Length: 337
Image (cartoon, rainbow, N blue to C red; front, side, top):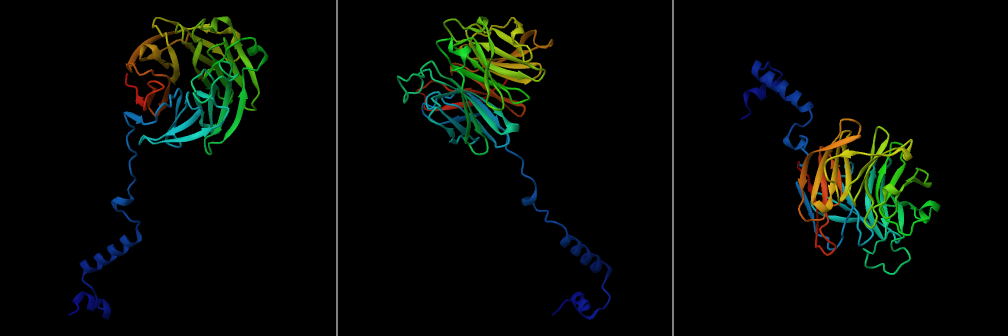
């Protein structure tokens, strides 16, 4: 039997008010987009507290987080490659070249889709031995972050001013607003500069930058007010270097011992994170006078894991734990102050 309401529809008879309203509502709902749970936006997973990557003997030194591609980049002292790490701990090779004997510090120039890597040879790579590059190599490699292609390789140690020094070790990189790269040399008292066209020069040379028999300059960052901040590993000295007048560099006054300073991260204009590897600590340093002075406002203990460098991910900072060259894995760990 056909219900009375459907008979009325078929014959054109008047419908009860409730039935008419129900039919209208059903018609309106049919015009609306689907509103099921499946169409609701999915919240992005929370950033992990740590990522443990099973890659034996990779010995990474540098780390950078690429927010656009949701991955970390890591260098390798022992294999001379650059790798990519996802939150699920998967590791893939991102870039390589036979000239990359050891990749050290990394710097991501996201707006220009460039990943910059400092290249050296301090005998870490077991596949490259007895080469004329041993303790002589200082170079800058630049990769395209979309393709992984090596777009530029600049030899820095062959610059006339650099050639006067017997040993070299390109260590870390900072990039200014115009795309100029500044590279520290830990075995010579030099900061190099490479412009967007690939032209290299010695930006600053001064005996005060020397580490003596140890490592000199290591980590370096660019401050948007137009200067660099860089630290010496040997004694923890922190320097402020104006871009417009590098010879007018000054020493930042501090009470905190930063001996063993390695990677730096300018978290905001007044906050600098310093990885002091030999101390097993990341120090949070603050300044209220444009880095004439600084004081420690917190610290994060890493333990004996040989922490090297640090990178920003959103509102968090992640520090790299390479352990040692024989370690079966490495970690990227959120620093909590």
